[in-house]
Image (cartoon, rainbow, N blue to C red; front, side, top):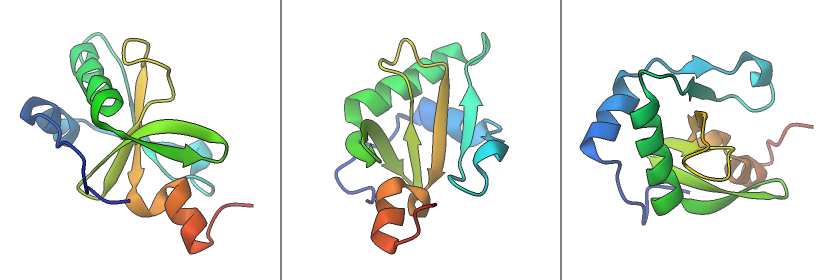
Length: 111
């Protein structure tokens, strides 16, 4: 999937995404490489704004049998594992090439 059809992040959310130190998910380094940012009191408003954007403007995508909302922008894909923006306590992101759908198409799903 590409940026096609997606609504770009609002400028303040884009600045937050660009300025935030994302943490590499070491546990999934060999299976599902991605990074994440955890909600804190200091970034809670921006995490909520990012989550609301993902839920409102993202596209449905698969991860095995799950269907989630994903926002694609600038070669990255953003998602929450929570059911609502208000309950989101962390946001994940990965490179476009590392989504389930891209890896399924490329035949590179982990075993």
